[in-house]
Length: 276
Image (cartoon, rainbow, N blue to C red; front, top):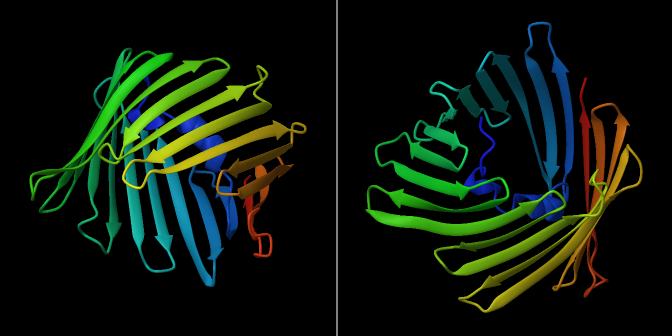
């Protein structure tokens, strides 16, 4: 794939990941193994609230093709087929979920040095079509996405965004929800190894005049341990401790406090992923 501006979904992703990734509020346990034939098996158990679920997933890679199959405790079977470079500089993704025969989806991504395009079509009798395009370079990019419902002939969504990326920082602005909201974010890395970073995000909903301001940061205590924290203007404080127990096996402990109502019980999350 070319080193172009990236997909539209990448706009604002760096700040979003720093402020949201690994802030779990449930209990999750994952074990991965790899067979001699190259098949990666992953078993996951999840407890969220009073509900416990689980799934078993398998992934197989062969040349430019990746096949993913997942079966969960509710007897749903999800399959994703990803093929790279059927046509040069493209990625094709086909997915479906049984027993929901209307869940099929076909997506084609095209990458160019100065543009990326994505088309996704639902494989059912009244397909929805999602389109996105991004123009620019790895440093500066702007793009838009839209969703079209073929049955009603109406646009279900349209979003526009712009991003500026430097080696030590990234800023973005996204106008979304059919022009009803705007989100601006910025992330800065304080060293070349990105051991310490900070991010800020301002989101506004025009229909309700509601503003949300979030700041957060991450700091690597050493090569195995990372701590993160975030706070928004509504008083929600989140923390994360991530530690690599053994190579590729990660323990994550997270918490969330309401600083404006300390009498409320804090929320805690735990995730343990064991990999070979």
